[in-house]
Length: 175
Image 1 (tube, helix red, strand yellow):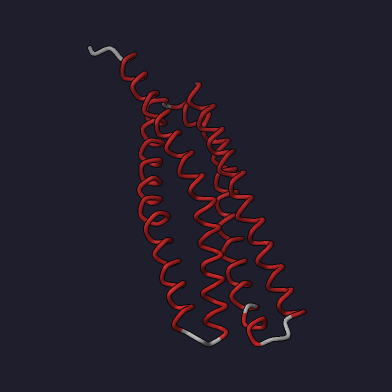
Image 2 (image 1 turned 120 degrees about the vertical axis):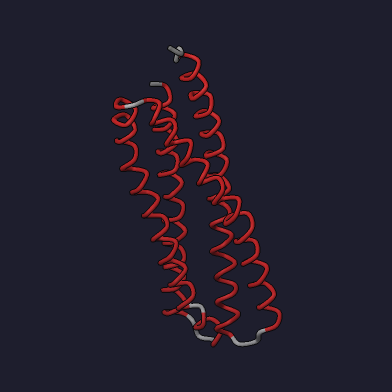
């Protein structure tokens, strides 16, 4: 039953982490509103749409993670009660899939997007393109900050799941 507490704490930590996406989304949306109301130059006006889109994307990500993990918290105890071995196996598979996604998306794709956007800033002189690239870089940095912490949590959670799987196997006696 200890693993249920570990799983619950992990899901709660993920839901808490999702709040940072929501906070940053609100900041991007506020920036968009500020550029709309106060922007006088062409470059300032160019930030309105990119920051609005980035804010909407971050809000969607944050809400999806938050509500997904909130609903998951209540299902852990039921899943463990019905079949502890299957619960641990399914959580290990899910954790490993998430770790693989982090390795690919967070640590390869996002830095690539940042590098590409930085190069575009140098070679493109249109205000809308520069504003878009700078906004993309800012949004990707937010994703890296929050997801690097999520990656550390999922690695620790996976280790605890593997320990629990070994404990279950050691308690099972062959016929």
